[in-house]
Image (tube, rainbow, N blue to C red; front, side, top):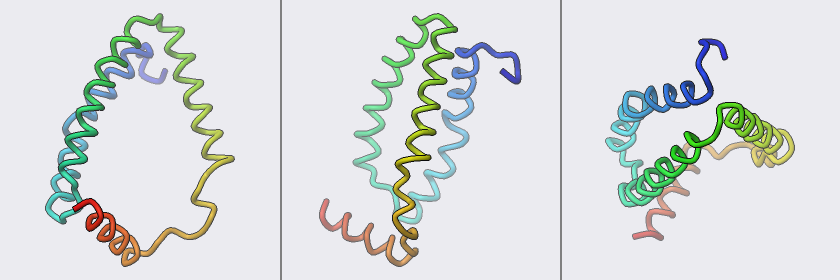
Length: 111
């Protein structure tokens, strides 16, 4: 590790850094523009809180060497997915107008 942290110290520090200062400013901007579905945020946030609690209990119960190996395997699996199964290769990303149209249709369906 670059800063000399153990795997658990690195993960804990990363979570502490990301908890509020990074996300809250972006959330405010998306909310102001009307791109935040508060109902979904509440449901998914509740799931994240439960998953974070249970995941942290599991992670903290494992030896540091095991955590490093689990982290490495997850990174390898993500790399394989990106290299071999990346959906963005199927065509160009939709334009801003197309994205807004798709979002509007989804909002209408959920209302």
